[in-house]
Length: 138
Figure 1 (spheres, rainbow, N blue to C red):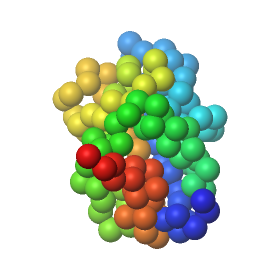
Figure 2 (tube, helix red, strand yellow):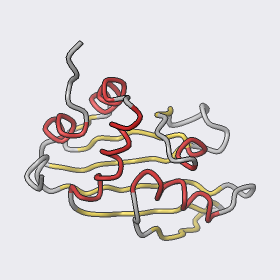
Figure 3 (tube, one colour):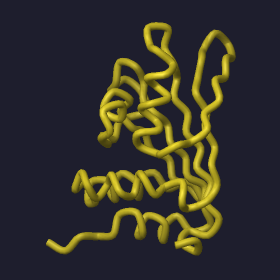
């Protein structure tokens, strides 16, 4: 499992709106990505939770959820679209993540509370996507 995508670093950022409970945002992220260490960062009047983890193991919970939700094809499309060089960027709906499910989102406007932003940096994004979301046979 460790050679897939080469060195993998996952960065997760979610804005905490004034109307939101920071702990609930933390729970939303952890329900999708497991027990990730999240720092509360305040800048320019905005509060964000930021987590950075290294290693393919950090995607194990996300990997399991993709299978449980049976959304491999949809997820594959989103992830492939999110490749920029050695980075894969995508967004998840915060409210859906809070209840332990995955729903991909747009970076702006789609979710009233803003999305969870996920950035995966790795040597070989294609092989990482092939591992996370293998093409299914129809």
